[in-house]
Length: 346
Image (cartoon, rainbow, N blue to C red; front, side, top):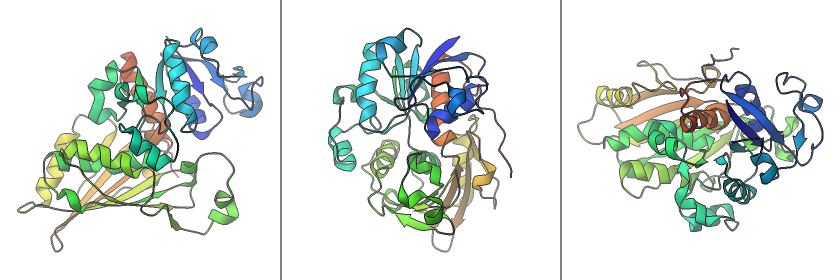
């Protein structure tokens, strides 16, 4: 039995971890932390969490947590996560960080995009980017996992096989992505209250979204070139889900059959990536509550442009589900354990 702790357990990702781990046969959640709710039982704040209802929120003291757990999930904001990760690693625990603090390998790029100094730059070389379908073997050996962002997960999984096979023009990539409101976290923000979001649809952080360098880093590794992409994000008035529509120019003499075969073959053995049949494209409703990434493809012969559409649940494959997938790999469990959930519909 693997004992784990959830640091920052009252946010959306922490609660999603509780939901998923409640049915994990090989894991016990031995500690949950929250500075604001310290001293209260989980059931006092979230009565739907039956299995873990008697757990008491506590302060995130690494020495104390190390006596109860072997691995921690960090569900805290960027900046705070780096300092916490350092303390937990020094206490002998493995760390899966759901923030952005260890996703970017270049300290200066992190500090430019996140407008803050990195609190543990010496740990960047040992952090493994936790996209299991691409970095599975490295994840198995890791002590520190940088869990990918939700937008990067939805954006990179469709593109990586085509870039590795050199089927698309690297400089032509445009990513148009939409997210549900839970992607912005659980803290109160005026622009995210019901009256501001309902019946509205807007672009935000145009050409400045912080996930841009993360996407470019992963795609650059796949293509072995220094890639730049156009990445535009939109807020949709729904609770959860991401839909990314991706455009790229095909190289000469490429047809749809070649493109589709590349995706199908690359992900043939992957449990959580589903390439949809010709003419079928994913809905966010079709992956809600699951760890799936569903991908549809169309090749526009007239414009020579490849059109990829991917859908994930931003709280599962885009965050907590992928974190559990990484934990399973690190612990030697079957990768799909506790993650074989069917979509919630409607």
